[in-house]
Amino acid sequence: MADVCTPVAVVTATEDGLPHGTTVGSLTSLSLRPPMVALALERRSRLLPKILRSQRFGVNLLGAEQADVARAFASSAGDRFERAAWHPDDGLPRLRETPGWLVCELDRQVPGGDHVLLLGRVTRISGTRGAAPLVYGRRTFGTHSAAAPTPTRSLADRITAFAH
Image (cartoon, rainbow, N blue to C red; front, side, top):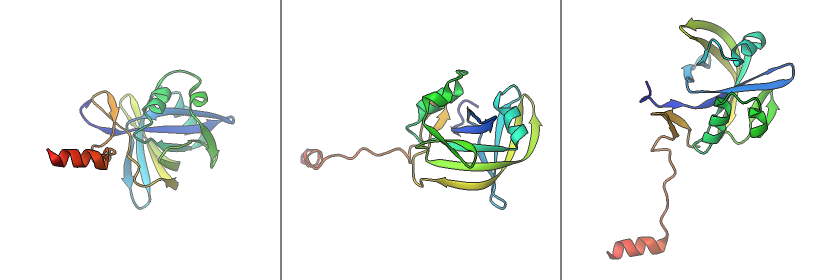
């Protein structure tokens, strides 16, 4: 499965007024009516019990330039929220400058091996359309080639190339 590219997001929750979050590569759209997403968390995830208790979670959809944010939230370091700018949004930790944001109510949980599949009903969405997404595949971060910014050549470069 390492060859399969996945979207990268930081899933967040709040407990006792404190922010919690982790990087996931298991996010997918599940339903349009009602709007739902699915994601998987390891059974031993520290975030999982917080989501199960609160019955809510936020999904920060990361952009192509945010691999450092993905790495920070994938680490076991306790200072993740000190390394990333964030603010509370609808009672959940929202990372600044992410192209997409979803607020989800937990609809159900489904056991799946060493993971738990969380089905979330999307209650609010916001973000920037057209931003290149961060994806993960072959153990590296990148973006979809069609979404990658195309370097523009200067007029002088174009004239030089045409002259040859």
